[in-house]
Image (cartoon, rainbow, N blue to C red):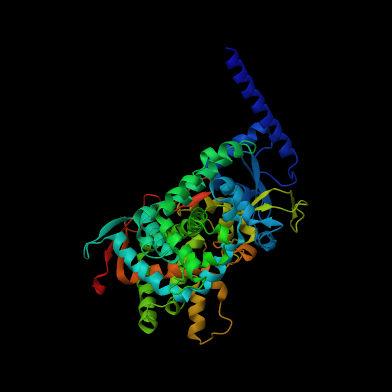
Length: 539
């Protein structure tokens, strides 16, 4: 009995401390920033619970009420500050890392100190390798990349002659991309080991989910319970089983023959060895690097390409136009990086799909690191430690300020659930009919200039790799995705290969499987299928 009383007393005390701490913390927040929820303690937590299951609607509500401004939405134990409007987005993305940190923002969203290897996650060399060596060597390893994509398509689709086969889209595209990425990361034969690939494909999703679970805890409990929720150590141990022989071989070769030993592969593992200290060259550390880099490269890339495949099969009238471009360019230049760079329709198709189907209603989370806070040009001051995100979906549809309120109110939630039946009139600032999937929206300008022979001042801003406050799929400015050049080359090559060598159609003619939305995550349909067959003209 006494133990029960003590237990109940402890629960009451802890609960009281949590509520008291949260009330004090929220009183110190920037209350001049409007909220999409009542500031009352119970209303706050009701709003936070609603945010878990209705994030798109809540972001829509905030953008509707406060167009072109900063507003805040409740999470379980913090406020999230949401930025909309190109002016404020540009200011946010121009801020240096020591003022507004994307690394610390991602750390908090993923709880990377607990779910990932903190030292590897924060190591700037990871970004330097991707931005430097990976991008610089694209031409050199492109033949290997294309070879792996060809082989992966054969293995993953496993088609029987020219018969149509129903293929699960998301799992298939994830496996294709995982093989291609790991051909460059760790090479043959590891990149084709099915058990290794399963670990790489599942790690990112698993870490992200566990990070969100940890985020549901009050801050003082996160370091206490977080290690029991995290599966980081198990993931490293299981992955090392498939990487240890390769890693030890590379370590041995370097010890015997120096850093530039004969036959040294030109892959991510070699580039990694160039930046690691001797103490860091061990199996657990290098395995953690491979896991985290796979997570960064695989999750969003798979989502982007699966969205594009759904767009293609739901709009099959565009396939011939893509084939025409690929046949012409490949006929002249072969399957080379140069050829891939001269396929504006392929590029535009992927860029438009990114615009229509991004990773969620809010992206580009950052954390205010300046003790003085961060002040926008409109006078909005966010305190130290604030989490800021961009209402990217609103920016991608880019209505004019005068019609913003009505446009968002009538259209944005409809798009989140693929309901296009509404026909509200609206005025546009930059995109013609932004709610319509227009696959060649960006390539028209490029092709028109090429037809005029006007190569100078080409519209670089129209390419998939370009960023702007109106197109934030790869971020923008200070923290634009460093791997976007590799991602673009990989996905353009894969899309070009598919339209050239395969026929594709939707499971239900003209129907695009609805996106899966939960919290701030928006993914292509988890259960959507497509029909595939080898292209008869190429048999």
